[in-house]
Length: 248
Length: 251
Ligand SMILES: Nc1ncnc2c1ncn2[C@@H]1O[C@H](COP(=O)(O)OP(=O)(O)O)[C@@H](O)[C@H]1O
Ligand SMILES: [Mg+2]
Image (cartoon, each protein chain N blue to C red):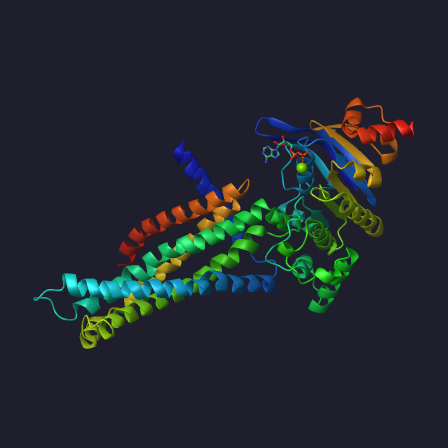
């Protein structure tokens, strides 16, 4: 019973995606929406990404230095571990989990509200493919912005680590720099970017699906928004597992 | 002209429309009346294709809407305008942008022309000054008028209104009714209005279809309503004392 309902939802999701990926009616309108969504979903998330990454970068550095490093370990280990954690997991997976909460609930409640106030019906009556008009700009906007946010996040994390060196004097900047530059593998950076693109697709399409299929009123919109966050977070975690194995 | 043939609609095993046949003529305001839950909204949604009818035909000037491909439907929908029960304005857009929206989407004309056309439609509904407000900042009556302006922006041949007067005071209701009526006459649209407002029935009911439990119970003009013999219709229309007295005086 549960399985059939999952399959049913997955089928609905695929149908919605097929409608979403159709040529926009008018590129002028698509462009306008696209720019708006990049600002609303991407640019508006920069603050939270910088803030969280800064503190996590600093905390990882302190933890490694004070609690893990021991006499037999080289001095560069704190910087090295901070860099690898930020690049490999935090800036892509964990950050996308956080954004699933922020962006996912935003998308689901916006589209859900448009559904219950008949704005989606109004689009359909005008002869507009509402799925494509509403969802495609959000999806493409997220795919554009997320890799940038990954870069911002890693950068901010490293700055956080330096703050512990310069302001907190936990370790010397020279040791930190040595660690951050030690045995750098460029692919790790690209791995984070590739993963985040998948996660961006999950967040925007799954949240749009939950919003789009709302029936009823404000209670259902609230529920859709919760479901969107929970489901996209789960899917991010699962796909992280597969992607990490695949890309390593 | 819109013709319905034996239109039926069920949700799972619940029959809502039980075979409705009728003709809505152009240049006339066609009213669908009936109690709440009698299937007015479902009927309208079946006509415009927001619901798929279980069986039956919907002909737009002879073109069968139910059997059309998706593409043909999209094209026909550009000839439709609809005013929803709660106006359904896009709340991220200003009033002017709302009215311009269908033009931006489908018109090949220049920006200046589209803007002028939108302004013309806003003037038509007496909302010249509200152009730069947002839907959240204007009253319900004004929202309905914006919805009308948006619906007529592309000069539709078919105009649909679902309870255009719900939630409005009697005076504003009259304004909306008159507006829809005069637009219908001016542009020769085929207009279909769902309502349970008796003032509308008496005021602009060129053709009135009375739905009772998903069936076409009675049909006629506003002049025929007064003398109608149908018992269910009478108990619906003359439910209020006021209208009963009006009827007694008329006889
Ligand atoms: N999407 C739906 N699913 C199931 N039943 C519905 C749906 N929409 C309407 N109905 C049922 O159809 C009947 C007619 O509803 P409606 O057309 O909205 O009435 P009204 O005449 O007040 O507009 C109601 O009993 C309602 O419960
Ligand atoms: Mg209704």
